[in-house]
Image 1: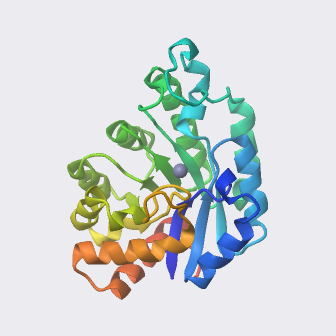
Image 2: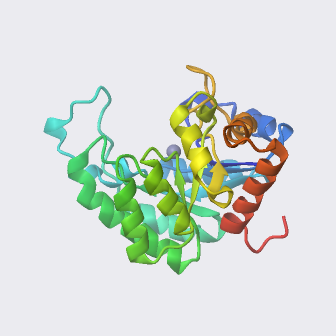
Length: 268
Ligand SMILES: [Zn+2]
């Protein structure tokens, strides 16, 4: 089976097509798609969508930029989109914990030093809260680590989190190998087909540390095209090509890595 551990099917670009996109994934052999929530509204929508498809699994979280929203200096915001609304953190975390038995992972959560670095202290505080939530309920975590890969790694180690996937990792290869050595996985999106940095990552990591994702609608193999879970098939082929290994072996290894991290007790 193929697996997509990081998809955003709750995104305006999929509106009204979520069920068709989910069906196309299954038809392509993508038997597990972890749909990641980003904030309270998408978390609720993720649960509703996943309830309709047995190959979709919900992960609920809070995007780090949203997690740090209360600490953003709005007067200094220079980007061409509005800063995120302030989230009621207690309510958001309470909702996730109330539905914890249905979720396969806590995510996406993490740190983002790119958009609003002044909010990093608050992002870290929220990430630590999510680490403790994950540990309390024995759930793995799916992490966003933009320009904060090292710091995220340190926080996981300090908090004693052993089950986690670094999604769409963009840091140094050397650090990625240390992250893998510590027992975490790193998930690679289909953009690996034309992305040299991800190809280098696919070559450098031990096979036991590699997972696949799409991060759809972003990070697709075709420039400017909407990405979707069915494209992990192309991602696996590109990872196998980069490593010089047979596609079937790479696909099977990734499926085994998926089960170990996300479904260790199932016979799937
Ligand atoms: Zn994401």
